[in-house]
Each structure stands twice: as structure tokens, then as C-alpha cells.
Image (cartoon, rainbow, N blue to C red; front, side, top):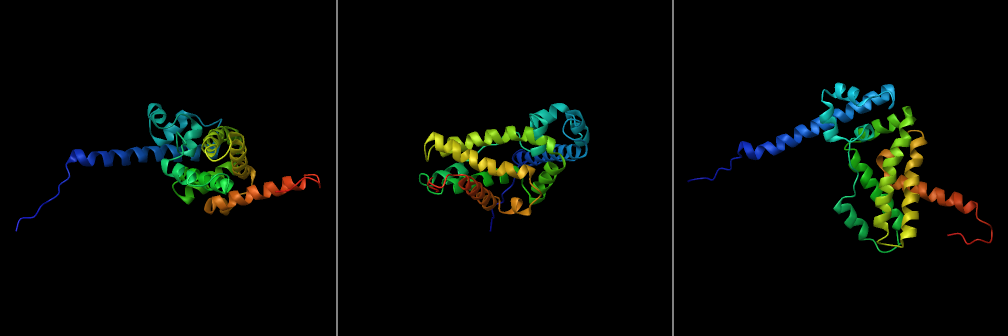
Length: 213
């Protein structure tokens, strides 16, 4: 009896191999950036040094990353995916808005690091090299704008802006905090707990006659 045989041509297999090689190059640059910045600091680490460590050309570096900070993070662009957007917009109005923003931000940060070890390495880098925090805040500002723009579809632009700022502030508070495994495991729970604590601190400053929510 004749049987059908499925064959894969070299041309069809090539894209898979090409993508794997691209990912390997991206990872090599990212890991080199992490190592060198941890050793020498971001100012003393040049793009040329990262290229030498990763054994790539400067042209290749800029094909993957626009800056040293992007190489440290391992991504050139931070964007909300269609799936994340749809999940967030499935919520109704302001009900659970902040909680949903925490969950959305967790999804974004998870997409930036593929493995828990990678997240931990990055947190250790922040602890050892706090001078990279100001440059990292520029990236966080872009994330905040994306969160606010999406949240505005569930509430007013002003309240969306404040909600996004609140959640992002909770995240950036971790930059100066001691290493904490919770930040790498249950980020959305940790973020929401941090937001709640910020709310409690603010409430303690309100006049006794002011209604507390």
C-alpha cells in the first residue's frame, strides 16, 4: 500500500534555523552587556567592548539593539501585545483597574525576561550598579505612557494617567529596594501590595475630616 511521505525542503527549514541563529546572537549580546556592565559600570562599558565580548561587529549590535540599555534589558522595543491588550480591555470601567494594570505590567516585564534566572541577574545588576537606574527610568516612562493610553479606554484620561503612574511607581520602588524573590515570582501580587501600601501611607496624611477610600 502506498503511503504519503512529508518532506521538508532546505528552503522551508531555513527560516527556523535563521531565527535560532538570530536569537543566539541577541542572547550573546545581551549576556555580554550584563557581564560587562556588572563588572565595570555602564559608563565604562562601551558598545565596542560589548561587541568584542559577544564576538560581533558594531553593525550587528545596532541591528539588534539601539543602545546599551536596550542590550542590558535584552529588548530593543517594549510593547503591549495584542493578547495583553485584549485581556486588559475585557475588564469593565474602573472596577479592578489598578489590579488589572498590575497584571498587565507583570505581563510586560515577564516578556522582557524569558527565565527567572535572567530576571534575577537583572535585579542583581540593579543592586550592584544603581547608576543604570536613571537610564532605565526612561524606558519605564515609555511603558507608563502605553499603560495610560490603554487605561484611558476604561476611564477618563486623567484617572488613567494617575492609575498608570501609581502602578509604575510601585514597580520603580523596587529599583532601590533589597533583592526580594517575590518580585521575580508573583510580580502582580507584589505590585498590588505595594500600591495598597502607598494608598495606606497617603491615607495617613489626610485630615481627619477627609473621606478615606
